[in-house]
Image (cartoon, rainbow, N blue to C red; front, side, top):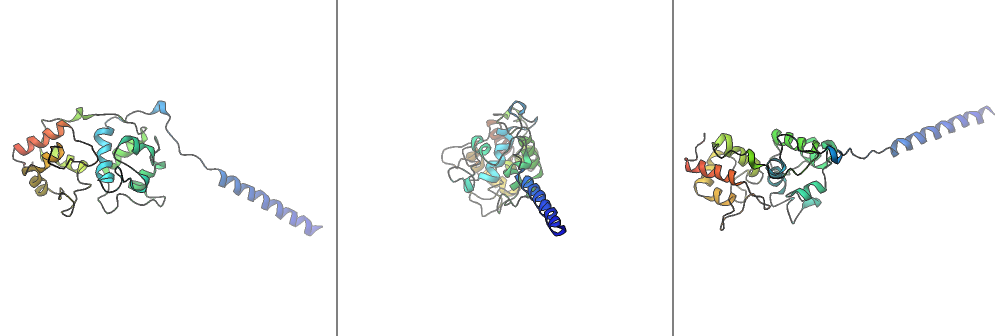
Length: 231
């Protein structure tokens, strides 16, 4: 009887802990999604001006996640496709795209592959955008100031956000834009202005159909006219 009682206790414990294990394994929570009513643009972050260029330059760049290729099922050159997969509005940590460029804690392959990663400023911008609901805030180019056309204050930041994802070295198609000398050479020959203004006979840049604003084109044009100085 004593043996039977012991086995009964052991069996009961096994059933209890087994059920607990099942309960634990079955307790899978869906990622938090910010309610639609709470989604709004994050002050200072504009999808068209700040977020889309990051995706096009660092992720799309005509070779990986741009139309029509869409490597691994991700097309990242327009809002509709960007938001359709890999983004959980209101929750960066649950967003696979954020995992791949920033956290890398869930065995997600780091992106971009064999290219410069996102800068800290770009990561902060992307995180703020996702956390605020990943909304399409439209064209926010009114923050551009065409009277500011210095190299350090306007031209270099513009190149870093919109161009460097593809043009990071001399072997890149179209050449490098990784330093002042290469940027100046592209500018004084007319190639840079022709490309970003989508002038017929030039390569429309950035790739993916996205076009810099008239204000940004004016900044580059004024910078070149003033001597393309490293100011």
